[in-house]
Image (cartoon, rainbow, N blue to C red; front, side, top):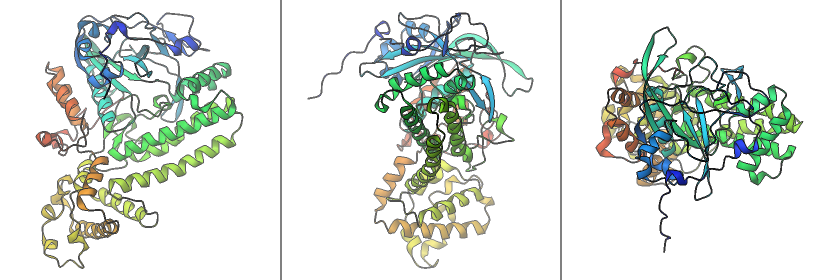
Length: 546
């Protein structure tokens, strides 16, 4: 008999254990004044009070990680706390010190410029969850910025954090979205067009918000003692199975970070997610997707696509470069950890192994998307590459194509020659993935001939495994989502919220709880990007502005 569920805890019963500020060196100054901060891992700060906080949305699933029930989430006290207006006993608000490479260049001290960690909650399962407010005011690391965030970017982070979790992708979580009742000046595309936007604060959760950059800043500055303390804390708190601190343990730590990071990237590629700003300060040491800025979802399949206007020319962080950039970022983390390890060869070996592992994991992932039970290293790489080339020959919606490919009946493509009765059917009837094409009327005849050749090869490969249609369809639908948070959907939710109607936020949150289910009543959210969204700001063009 299952044990009865324990009642939820109240906000005042949250159990705080702030190991990060307890065990690591902190800034002796408590001022929020912008400044260079050395020899420390964090600075204590207080969130900025707001005038009229209003709870716009919360995630019941994220709240359950803290053992909080719905009554607590819907209380005025919840809104006051997670807007930054009220601190609970046991909270120890602080901003982390870190540096990072931005677009491949060392940027020096960065730090939590608009994020304030409230403290770490230990839930009933003994799990550690750090609470962080994003947009709660200036910190010593804000540089020339105000430390605030706007509704536009906050809503996107709130929805995408929870959507990614439901897709099975490692990610930080989002607890709440609170508007502040205040306006914030923002220049969305850094082109001199400043306008007032409604302010907002997101509370996000993670076991830790430690980034590659937390280690880099101390290594670059030669603060080896602080670097060692941070690495020891990381081992003890998040990787205790690696043993006590030693060069060997630090090497194993790097190996695990590599493994978790690569696993995350493979998931991004599986669902067509593009992070947009893969700077080293945006890379979690726990392999979590972190810092949802100008992200996007690949719609027309184009490996060179980036949602970030800042990256439009270099395309460093485009979809097809994400694996390569992750490996480059890991090499920078290796450089940061080197003073603790003292040997290059073990780190280099791990990086070389990671390159090979990334290639293999990518191929195996692609095979699963195609419904293959087993990966055949002799035949499948060619099959996968040929399809990816086909997808680029005409604007093809990635999500819809793979989802509809599961409906393909193999028999017509297993028959010899093109003389079967179904071969003369028009493409709209012969191919279940026809709805994935944005401009099917412009596709040249040669494309359909090339597609036919690939489908025959694909059908023979599937038939060789003996998996029936229902089994293959179910397997493909477990890895190819039907619903993703397309940018135009997030923009519609933003438009509604800014106009005083937050209903679409709740509707999308509910939709994205089951992204692999058919949900026929929500079919309107499974279609291609509408034409009006092709060039609209917020749908096709995004920036780091928030």
